[in-house]
Length: 544
Ligand SMILES: [Zn+2]
Image (tube, rainbow, N blue to C red; front, side):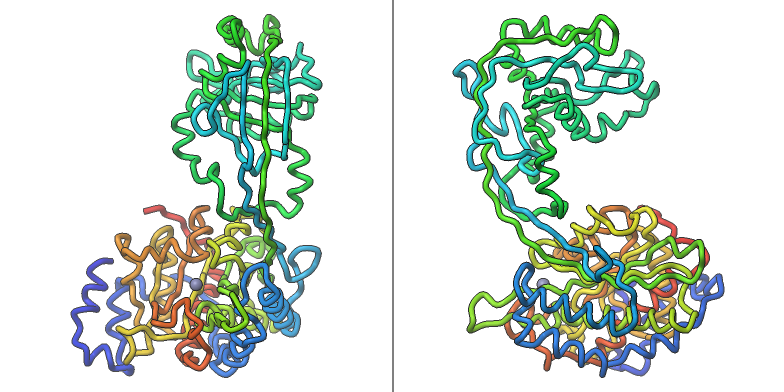
């Protein structure tokens, strides 16, 4: 890959400027053996041609207008933009398949932190993020709790073959148990009977929920690996930063019982003089001999939170595939429609290129797929065109989507993502016939080949891989929504025009957009999505 783009840089400038013969450049990127498609494909030309500069201009003139107020997530402008996008889908005859038969997936983001977190055991003060850690997202507010006793319940598990609660009554009491599950001398789980761990280990919340069901009012989880976990979980534990929460999260929080991970040293303090004896009973856990031990201790807890929530939405167009089996696999085409808003009435961040261009592109792509569907010609798999919000605040709309997906992630084949495709950057100012392609070869070499092949066949652009280099200091691969899909193991390709002086400034306006370039780039994204959706076999995932 490296030599490909080096080759590009070595080409004489006059050649780069020539728009009529870029063929050598893109052909050079694909080995000859891969230039011929190994399977039949429904011809997408007619539908590709419905993606036009004129249509894109009409869309972008609305999206990047003053009335959209810079489309900031959670603000009126974003909601207005979402309604506008949904209306385009409705007008195209695309059925509404989001939340409650709308075009939307409501997203809820929360930014919670501890305002007052403290723990005293028999007058001794213990320290947050040293002796213990607590996730604000998985705890209800608890201004004050004074405990007089707690019960040790082994691993805190209740399973058909293993039960720590058989002789325990924990109603109205605090419990303390070990993280994980019992493992025998051979390293096998006493729950699964083999080397694999059960869900009790995989998801620690399962045990907290069980304790709540049993009537416990507080849960202490002994974490023997607290030092490592504090390091790796630092981000989730630290205050600040928006995080996706289930839109019914208030209900969820009420379902929680307060819980705290504690160091072995703190566990000793919680259990007092008897600690050693109590913890030794763990050897009997799961057998008839095991009896949960009650310990009298004075424990004072404060777990008070403060926080804010933010609501946005993703807008989805679902165009069902025509193959009865393969339509249960999903090809995603995404772009973020949010931008930086209007911090005061004198300034609007129009975000024409970032990412009004991608938003218009994805709307046009959805219309093109729907046109094919109407004619009964569409590709085999289902195509989901999704416009996400929250991107400028940290890729949050797509993060929300992958945490609370509308369609199974294991049936999601690809994410074709567009973020800024309406402008030319400085190195290409005389050559509008280019696009930066990022990420296509990271998880699936087939995706890379497909994009190259459709480009060679139809759009004939210069595909610039400069920013795909793993050591690229800009790290664009990690900076747009496809990254959240890639993190889940879903192959992703990202189209991008590079930066310009108007990037993230109020001057990113619609009259600076090159609509012919925008149309061609949207066509390429459409073609790649089409082929991935229509080919007989699912894209192979091959981690490099
Ligand atoms: Zn941006």
